[in-house]
Image (cartoon, rainbow, N blue to C red; front, top):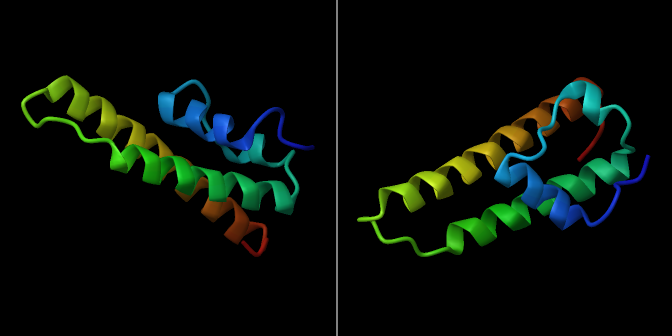
Length: 89
């Protein structure tokens, strides 16, 4: 099944916590879709890392770290799913 909408928006929704990746949800995607998702996760991760946040504002620092954490977890789930199913990425 193809990715509904923009893959970048899909990755941004994961970062914001609106979506989460799990093995059952990844089964419906083709190997090409999984590669696109992985590439967009990395792209959004780089964009979030570029955001300059003042160290005094702990809420913004926490929010940035939480988004990065969600993206990292989604990437690990995706990579382990591909490794388990022997899908080259």
